[in-house]
Length: 298
Image (cartoon, rainbow, N blue to C red; front, side):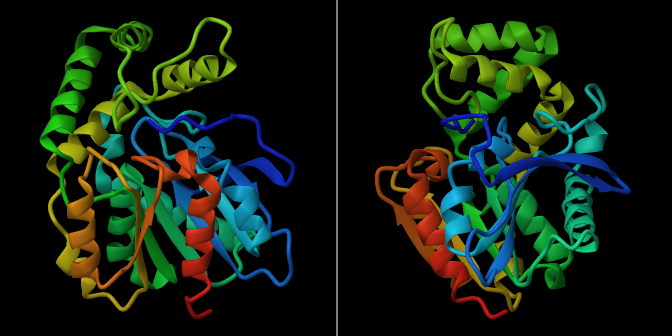
């Protein structure tokens, strides 16, 4: 779980609901603050995350001429989803959601070409599947701290612990158990929460409690069983970007380096960042993203 510095949208970023035939999706929409608008990016959060994980990226990207729309997937935080039906979160269903979001934004006149797709961690795997399904829908793909296949053995064990806990405990009990473990930030539990007066900790707790347990179980299983689809992605005529921090135990950095080579992708390592460069080093990350998008033909 990324730990955003705030859950309050800054000036220039507004909350909205993307209405699609597949339901409504909560989003944070940041218009470009310079002219001309250079493009639009759809941003997908990771496991246990939310659209707020991109809040610190959106103003600097707006200053570079990019409109960004960060979305809660179904069952994530403020987007509704079944709380006990795992089939609703099958990968194919999540892909259809992403394509429906893109179409709805296009119909509403929000999108300015080129349209870029970015996914963080689990969001990267969903984004990859969406591009493989409909490569014509996006001008580029950025995989942020998202690897070629299943997560590391260490993270698979943590995901299993979470699934086992959710089988016998409710979300409040699981949250308290995670706090008591004081786990470091990673793909499963995020940064340790602060004290009772810590507004950030309260917001993180609220996000956790509003996330669907079925979504956590289903997508956690996907993280642990994802096949290697790099060759399929490499076969597409689509600009690709692999960006990560300089440390990551969800997908080790050498694995991400190798994936970038196999994809013939642009590669960025954000110094001082770990699994969530979007929250660890947002300005450096935004610069790297905009520099890459600037090279993509309209």
